[in-house]
Image (tube, rainbow, N blue to C red; front, side):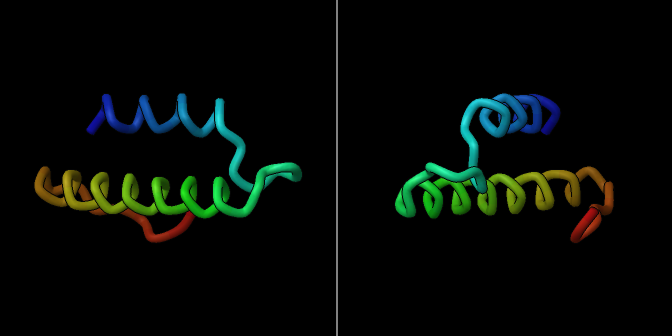
Length: 56
């Protein structure tokens, strides 16, 4: 979970999602990747007994 979250942070810093100039297809694919990563993190942390927040 730690490694996944670190890799996601690297991606998030390198690949803008909601900035101007990002085409719609790229925007949507990056949002889907974010959602999939969030789901995996939530499930993995749940297995470890760590509850997550829906939103910060």
